[in-house]
Amino acid sequence: MDRVIKKKKWNSKRIATIVGIIAVAGLIAGSLYFTSGKSRLNVDTERLTISEIKKGPFQEFIPVNGVVMPISTIYLDATEGGRVEEKYVDDGTMMKKGQPILRLSNTDLELGLVTQQTNVYNLLTQMQISRNAAQQNTVNKLNQMTDVESQLKEAERIYNLDKHLYEQKAIGLQEFKQAENNFNYYAQKKDLTKQILKQDSTSNTQQLTQARQSYEGSQNALNVMRKKVGDLIVRAPVDGQLTSLDAEIGQNKNKGERLGQLDITSGFKVRADIDEHYISRIFPGLTGDFTLSDKTYRLKIKKVYTQVTNGRFQVDMEFVGQVPQGIRRGQTLQIRLALGDETQAILLAKGGFFQQTGGNWIFKVAENGNVAYKVDIQLGRQNPDYYEVLQGLKSGDKVVTSSYENYGTMQELVLKKGNSQ
Image 1: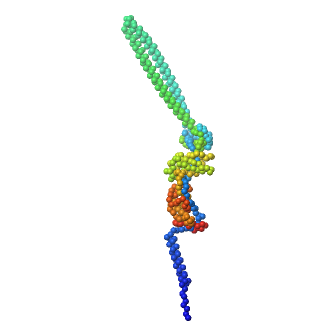
Image 2: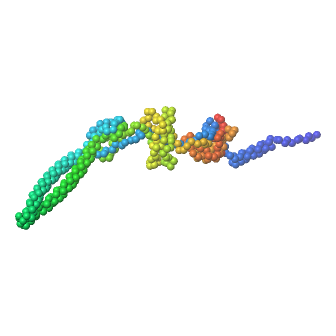
Image 3: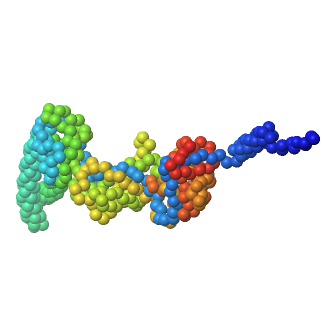
């Protein structure tokens, strides 16, 4: 008797076909997922820097290098040119006002001084001769005046006598007229002599005044020449420390050439170099601080030099409050220069991410801590430690702040501990 043999539904051929179909469907689904969805990359959290966004005080500042300088510097220039004959002190010496530093020689100036002294002596001699001559001339005029007055008195006496005799008919008219003419003549002569004496006195006064002015002018020129010769000895104009002395015995120095400088040691200032990018934001009154020997000191901008050289400009800063003990000229300080007042802001720690994103986006860590996904952000001000967050993040968020150099165009980072891809 024949048996009906049941046909198997799940033979090996059918199973293989179904597995193949499922595999192809899986490949298609995976392809669609990875081509149309977000690109992901597994990363080891130990290779990342994850920072937390926080709200706190923010102050925009820039780091600048400052050099300690004397509060004031007096430059020593050669008032007169000459040859260096003698050096009295060495570079670095503490000087007192008026103390000699070095001596120059200048033959032309020294010869000019001798010539001017001779001119003054000759002028003085000539002025004395002229004065004596004027005095003698005045004496002669006074003698003449005395003679005229005596003659006038005698003529007046005879005139009065003859006038009386003529009225008494004792003498004739001719004799009386002669006495009258003599009297009138000597009266006029006296007036003329008086006028000449007055003019002579005025002339003598003018001559003496001119001679005195000429002598004073010559004496002033002599004093100037003496000062020029005296300036061949270079002296300290104020108390201070002599620095940068550039003069050797036998060396010739031209007029106006820099010989050295004198630093006023009563205080210090700091001269800082700043990038020209900030020139419109720097003005007197801005403050900065620096740390020295674990102690913080404050500085304030006193003067801004707007001339830009090699992309940088300079400012002078003065100490506010205490000055560090033992600070030295030429010492370099690392200064945090504040560009504004302190405010409250959302803070993002600085990191290598900025080089790839330009601050336009960042990887934000999900709440579960397993994934970091790309979010758009907007940053504002910055300082060496933080960026100010304007949009895209809030306090408490966690973000990846290390470099994104190896992440390419990934949209998400799958965070794995001790495992990376």
